[in-house]
Length: 88
Image (tube, rainbow, N blue to C red):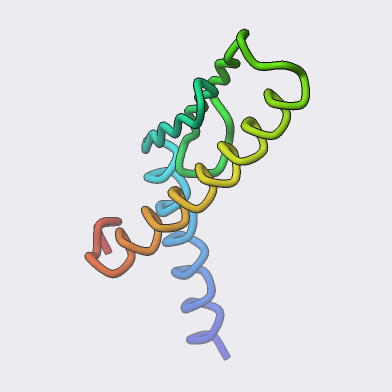
């Protein structure tokens, strides 16, 4: 029983280290003049809107750009896990 608790504690510690490492990563995505910058925890850090787009265009491209950013962060996370990039 204590071994399982110890393993659980170690797993939580590794997850915290992984989250901290991802927080330092930056992902930039641009789509039709709409640009976002996200960190590895899927937090949006910057948004730049293309003022030449109408409201519907801005909304459409912002949504697409955020979704692309999320996918890029997920790919980054998977790549780091496969390559052992978290220092485990």
